[in-house]
Image (cartoon, rainbow, N blue to C red; front, side):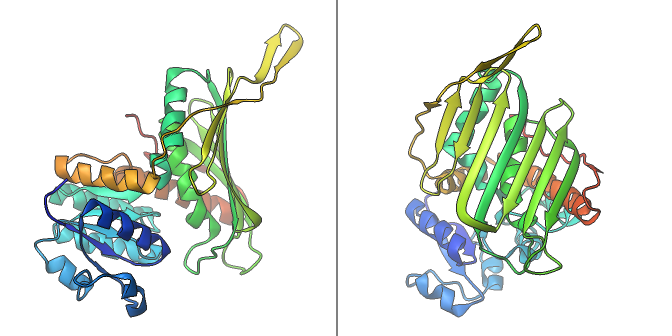
Length: 333
């Protein structure tokens, strides 16, 4: 990491304050700004930038973290890249695939690092789950399903699909190193006619693997669970908000002629390092800035997630019609 603070933070809401805390811990916070003056009360003397334009014009700022509402992501990230800054922008990267594609192109032309805050990819449980899949411990993967349920927060600028599902679309692409070929989504709008509050999305992959993502912000309790079903073993990642757990099951159904033989197992908890995903994400961003490398959740991956979201939205509007998708969602490394 650099010997002097070089990162500016834009957005000091609930999630932006987590970025603030970690950038301070790393000694990388140069300045921060929020259009709402009351949010800036959390800043220490000397940390508050005069304006967003002052950040863009400050040659001492090499990188920008954007933790603002989703509709602002495209314009703010575009301005930062054009000003010669590396960018970490929160999910969803943009609200249109065409805008995400533009950001990728600008980052390439200006030689800047562009990364998207798909924090689930940096969770130790997901990193370990990826290893289990790639090593063949689970056998051939049959399907992956995710539940991301809670009561709120209902966002005025996004429906539940764009607010919750990016995490799981990103995780599936990372775990499977594949791009979905077809997407189908159904949902319901209970609070407002123009925005879904509950959706179920089905993803088809060329390998034959199926993915299912159920999201809702009208659920009585928090549940974030991702399960991978293999033909040898199964694994479940539960994110409880304070660390999470990964459990491996030697369970399945074997076919012996005409007989189906069930294997049942109570499961084995896999020990995980006590590392904060956002801290790992920011450390990775800073390392990529130093080494001038493409991040794990780089701009192209972010574009892939937005393209899948767009396809799911089209399917949702059509009542569940399958939509072809060729987004570069999978991460091969």
